[in-house]
Length: 512
Ligand code: C2E
Ligand code: MG
Ligand code: MG
Image (cartoon, rainbow, N blue to C red; front, side, top):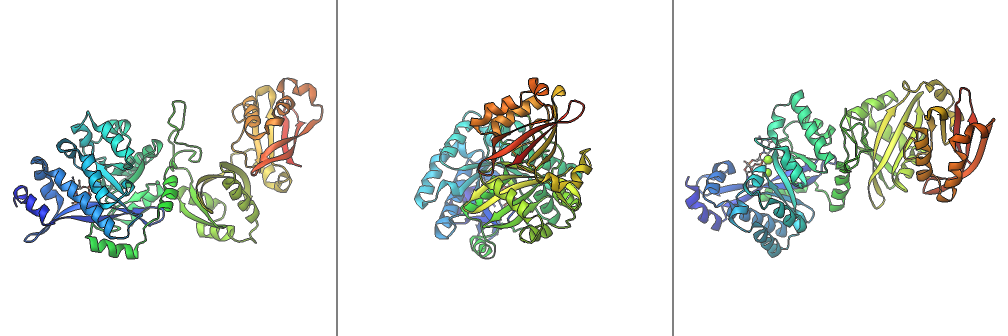
């Protein structure tokens, strides 16, 4: 067919249509938005896919007209239907920016239909940057300032290079479906690395071409946030999208903010709760194996686990749980032996927010349960957690195992060796932000004073802990009370340093 000569007629008669393919939030299964894909609906030939006409339109410098027609289709659809919270992504060609002032044309259309920029996202490929090397940075600024998101399409296909990711602030990276097609270990490792890398630089991830349950499970496990593909739905006409949305609920704006935060967690890092989007030079986060991670939702007092990865499922087996549903049942049941401890940790995580690390014991297995507040929306909170079984690693495990009731009277028990500048934490129930002094006792003391001790008591605490005079001062033990962080404020605690053998001391914190 002679697309070029019949293009004007097709535009005027409305033969250029937008088909929509749903984009699904991996964790919640809700519809996040839809990608608009062009179809030429010819009265004689029927539906013609873009693969047949995009090239000729590009060659004849007509593609921007097609893309603007798509923007208009989407805006009209948005205006005519109730899709306030839906997000639509639209493909732009590298040549759009050569032929016209695309930004102005697009914003004109949005204004005409009263569509907010936040509802429209643009997909561009690397070729856009290569074709417009001088002005792409400016384009990013222009689009971002106006509130549009820019997605990188087809990452991992053809010539996509890391330079482009380094140099341009993409909001979302779409992993090309060619990577999923060969679903062997090598491809899976490549995809996990892409997802992990994206999180490390603060870009959200979307996988296209998801066709099987197996691919879905894998992408969920590695923390890929949005999915698109025949497994969920094929591209469909406007009426079919409306019907689809009748049976598949789409996420609200506040849900989107909530889950976007979860997407920032580095699921694959060694210490996922500690990693941050800190891109400063001295940040030393790096990638290692898959860490156990789960997301805990606290919704008006009720606990659920919307996400648990395979490593987490393995860890909880060691605590005697064969499924996350069992945990959900237990922790929502006030009669459960650990209900109070669990809820206390959750509450401490939410107010005042931050990281809580608490040692616990279930069925003779000692583990550290770490929680971090990720997002809050009213009385609904999202908490990331890891579980780390410590039984076999700490030499004093047996002591810990048989003396939980004894230890429970302490907030913290740590063995210190001042001469060697060393500290080994034996037990912690206080939920302090971190384990202090694992590297250096001196450093641990100053950090603890700065982070956990009330400013009024700080100097006295440092004098109490003065390592140079400690030997002289401690015959049996020394003890003082300090205001130490606890819950949402400070609480008075007894801090004691007791002499042990071989230059060792026991450092304990106990609530008054
Ligand atoms: P794309 O942007 O990467 O779009 C994804 C393509 O993959 C679509 O093909 C979609 O139908 C197809 N697809 C989605 N899920 C699956 C799946 O699970 N399995 C398989 N095998 N395929 C899947 P489509 O609609 O034929 O579009 C092809 C390409 O044409 C698009 O690739 C995009 O680069 C271009 N295109 C489409 N619409 C437009 C447009 O309005 N403007 C411009 N400039 N390009 C467009
Ligand atoms: Mg696309
Ligand atoms: Mg693509």
